[in-house]
Length: 176
Image 1: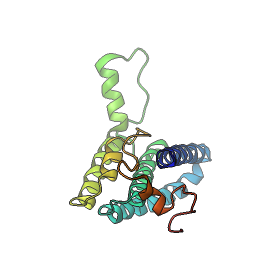
Image 2 (image 1 turned 90 degrees about the vertical axis):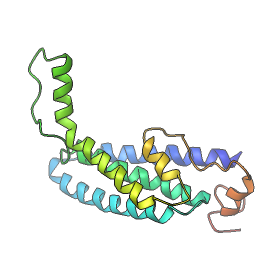
Image 3 (image 1 turned 120 degrees about the vertical axis):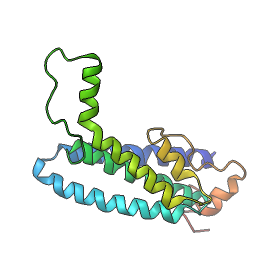
Image 4 (image 1 turned 90 degrees about the horizontal axis):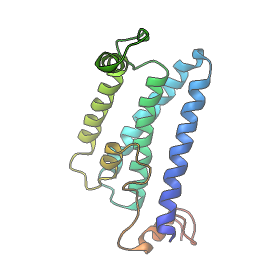
């Protein structure tokens, strides 16, 4: 049972903790945004390294690293958009009564660079993990908003997860 419960709890905790952190940082005074963005950029670089590192790691640990790395990468995109660093060419609101295709076009122009940055990140992550045996990073990037998805749930042998120490009665990762 713990082989299934621990990944779910990990995903929920990491997802909601990172969401809370982004909301908190976005609520701080604007003068702090440059520091938040620099920190997020450093975490984004660490995320790319984590994805590259876990590309051939087919263990449960590798899946956890890939999942957390994709969430860090996604966090950079969210912070960069919410704080106004990577948005789009349209910087003003629609006129009253704007609707239909015109409204859609305005919305697209307000977030265009953000959407393109996501595509560029997807291509970079694919390039970093191309040829790797593990697929968790790819799946999480493709379904970044799916909390459950292809989380590291061993489908063959529960003792494999326990041998790594994840929520095992034997202790933390790497202990027996």
